[in-house]
Length: 118
Image (cartoon, rainbow, N blue to C red):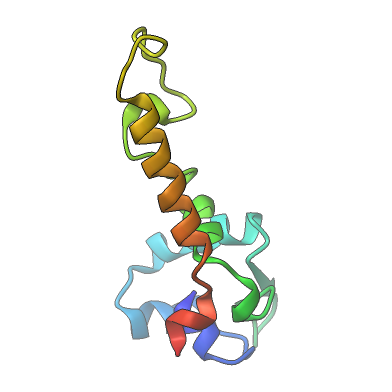
C-alpha cells in the first residue's frame, strides 16, 4: 500500500512491486486480492496493467488495511469474533482487554496511508 501510495496514482504491475519491496510474487497476489476485495485497490487489466489505490492515501486508514488483511484486531483470544470462552461472563479482566482492543483500533484508524508516506 505504501508503494502504491508513493507511485502517485500510476499503475504498478505486481512484478515490479514484488521486486522493489522484496515480497514474493505469490504472497503479494494473495495480499492484493484481499485489498481489492476490501475496495482499497483496483486493478487495470492488459499489457500495461497493474494496480493502483482506489482512494487517495489521505482517505485510507491503516485500520482498514489491517482489517482487510487480518480481520478485526484481537489482542486476546476471547475477544476474537470466532472464539468463545466459557468464563466470558465471569471474567474480571475481559473489560480491560476490551478497552485495550478498542484503543488499538482507534489508534489504527487515526493514522492514514498519507501519514505513513510523509
